Image (cartoon, rainbow, N blue to C red):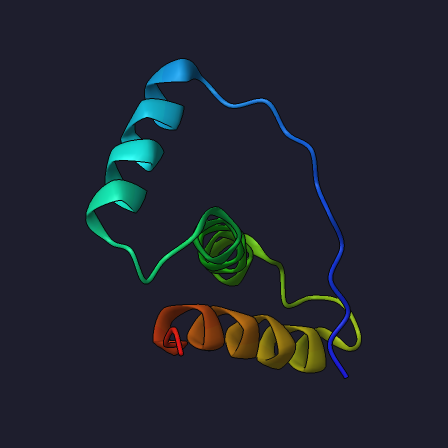
Length: 74
């Protein structure tokens, strides 16, 4: 079972315009999918592996990232 948590975040206008353009040209993506992919990639690249349980966390984050990349609209 997957839990979804809503996040309210302010982003620079330039980033918003770029995201809007991307979503207009990629109808199979939505804002939630983009943010899940971006945040999980950031955490994979920058998350430390010096804590206990880091392997489980890394795998869970990698799963979210891959699911975001390869999910298809039905």
